[in-house]
Length: 240
Image (cartoon, rainbow, N blue to C red; front, side):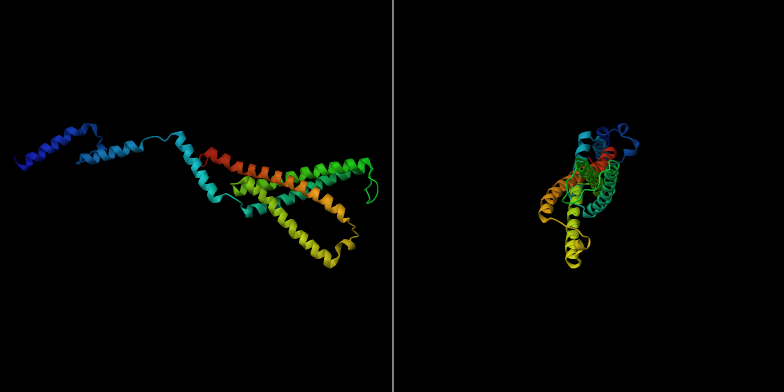
């Protein structure tokens, strides 16, 4: 048997194993093993991805992004504090204007220190207190939303960062006021008289209530700001 006859037999056997009619024209090659390799790759790549696989991958991607970019974003928190401070002054000014106009319409004079307070003045004071708490809540809701929207992740935590910036700035202003007060005696020049015991009791209660009001508003606002990005990610399917 010659070498040419053996090569023809091998070729015939390969042809029977992989008929040329069953192989697409673009996949036909002289080597049948190459054809089988191409077909296996094509079959593997054509397997569709299920919804559970997609959900798992998006959740994993969000977890990775949260670990990398989550936490406090102090720049966004400071901007949120500035926004909250602006709207606090704006809303408190509106509350003061409303209470003052109502008191003027009722003919209620300003209460003096050491004198008895009328029932109308007490009602106006309660209304001003409630209005001030609502104003602070709305102001820090907007500030927390700003911080959460800018930070994208950890909305509640960055809303709390707005309140932390508020405490820091308040401490710095308190130190500055103590230094200026001791050097220039600002209180006596403005004819202000304070009772330290009254300031300590009333101030502590007011500070705690106001701080809780700020934390509630800023935390809710931060969560709303984060939810804005999460809704977009859910619509686009980028992050779960």
